[in-house]
Length: 432
Image 1 (cartoon, rainbow, N blue to C red):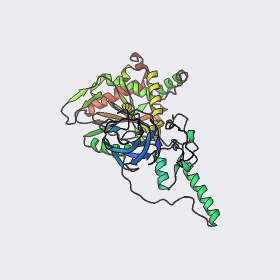
Image 2: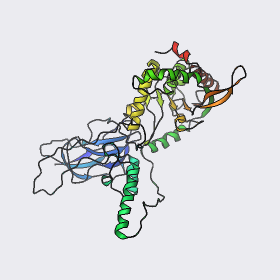
Image 3: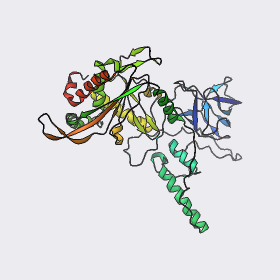
């Protein structure tokens, strides 16, 4: 019995997504729960599984095209014993787990948790008269960026030996494969061939995270914003961090400055609740949020993601450090859930991790403020006695929605935040 399967409602108001990769072909036999395709939403890469055994009879959407929710995705010839309603969604859950697959470099710390490969299809006893080869449900493990490079170079990923864990294919694996292929062709023809194809200009549509960012930033700049920058002294905070680092290491947590920034920010928000509020789209109503859900921008190979640390006002420094490390690893490994990317009431962007000193971040409505942390450096400054000394300094840059936040309010709020960081002992009276 032939049955059409439809792209399910992934949630978040998503009506279409890019079909990144078909993991099966027409005529393939598939098993229940076997991965059928990867689709890219504006937040994550989502894998669509089969819900029944059968044979793929038709693929409605070409790789790289946009698939629409509740539109036919593929058709299957089902087993005679399977009874289905007229239309069947190809996913049992309306909120599948996100699975970004970053193109991690080999020399990065081994913190990324690679997504598991697709489940094996049920192997049936082969009929000697059946010439159809056994179905291989394993696929090359690679990020969308690597798959795009393979398409541009006209390379089949299944033929490229992957040097990563579980055979993950990296960009350098494709380069090495092409070099070996060209060398082999040169020996056969006696003519020296170029190592790789010469790069050519090309045009492609923005999809997935890139398209979402373009849309969100365009909408954000419709809001009147202003920026305030300040210099933060880190000498005492670095001393506290140095003392606490061994204690956190016993919990297998690498302590950075960011947990201190998050906790101090939550304490400052308690004194200035307007910075934790949300303004309606028409600017006529303000909603004060009781919880501090702080988004932290994380740079991944798939794009900039902002996982959210929830209820920071109730969390200890250790709790925040643990959750921050978990979310960061999940973001870079492509294992963030959609719910972990939603609901931020204010955002921190740590450009200093990439070497930047000053930035003018853009507020993302309905939030009313965002901060960018620069790279800290040792610079000469005069102390209160007029003596020149070395000081650890960082630039902080705030942007705020000027419809609700004025310059004086933001300046007072920033000074409150900085005082907690410059005199970290002040936080002890409030830590929970």
